[in-house]
Length: 187
Image 1 (tube, rainbow, N blue to C red):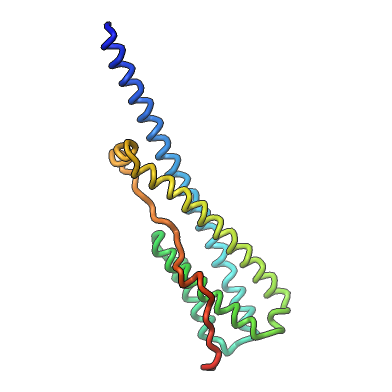
Image 2: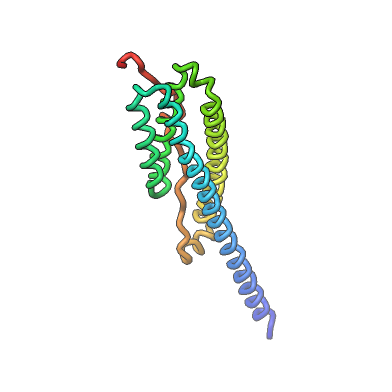
């Protein structure tokens, strides 16, 4: 076999090794994105489990705030059945808004703010919100890596051949980041 034959074999070996490397990298990023979404789901479930206890505690002090309680409960139910990243993000925006209104209601009741059960629930909710934020950041980082690999040449060729799909980022709306507006004048 001549030099040309060895060059062809070397090129084929390099291409095969690169293909294996690029494919494994795409699989790794896809699995990390899946892992990130699973962590978000775990923290959201934890948050959903806290909501009924929080509503019940506040309800005992502020029974006339029925609309707020119903909004939080409906938002929780909708979020639990949300499908897809965008649907989940929209549902979480509603849950966050409802929780902020619920906590704003609690501000008007000094006895409630001093209630040990309420304080424990509020602290646990705050911790859960931090864990959700961390899980969201991890997921979005992994989605960025996956999407970049899928869009970058030459790995985009493999991504197309093996049907790797880009993922959506889990973002919240700017309105959720803004301070909540509570109007108690109408009551």
